Image (cartoon, rainbow over all chains, first blue to last red; front, top):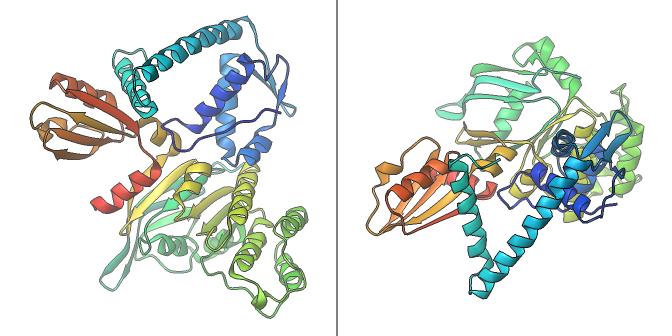
Length: 132
Length: 297
């Protein structure tokens, strides 16, 4: 089974963190098409978070078409073409971000400073309506 | 499943002499969710809980639990049948052994879940043949929690449940809370351990000096609470930054720190309008928000 790790100290809802980690696992191959994820209650107990957190992450992922929820039998990964296209884009973006971060570090910036720059920039994006 | 609010209060108040222990408390707790109840010692948490359970009478306002009015004696009885409550200093029968008190409590509840009883007895390593009075504080707490959990009630009200538990015990407690919530139980718990509230709760209610100062979902809180640090060329004008969502402004020379509960974007825009030399946005945790609320008032 997958290992998930939720961080309560970041400014990101736990369900979003879980969604990202499941997406990430689908991208890097840790989870394959058709793989079954633990039930909502099981995963909530394992992560010691509210079941609503897991339920929300699952239902959002179902909305995105990455997860298929079957009544009574759990959640299954369904990596269709669209989801795969998103995954490819994210992977390409992730390489870009890696390069950029390396660059900034080489330029002498601390991780905390880089983190704040990202936060600030994302907020600026929100203003012109590019935030999802 | 029940769709009525697990807890609902309107202007609930309690005066002790000249002191307003709880003042016009209006809140609603969704069924099947986990809600953390935060406040300093003496903020009015226990008084609120006692009013909800009909243990003390409000001096104003009203409330309902699972749709039953707390002020109506017959309905209050129904509340106690459907709600399990573990207080800070739960009274247990000292002369009984663990096995006896479990058997005794079980006899009052037709919907007792022996599977929960057995699994908690095992995982919490409660010694069946020890007398309650010889148990450590942590053990007594675990026993009191077991007696509540095994009823699998519609609503669990826990007053400082992790108090006196070791880290493993706290983890087991939180796991059990999550498990029960997964089966439809609403959990309302007070705590001083902000980290545990941050982890398991869907919502948080914050009370200070008897007044509700915050009732928010943790998702919203993580998403929209931010601390914004700005540096300007000259001393900034605070008034410019008093806008909706801005909870607190601190200015020091050319620097300004703003705490927002929403609308961070608008603060940033304003900052750029005034040619800020630097703008930093950082997410802010429940602990800082809590401290901010209790210091400010």
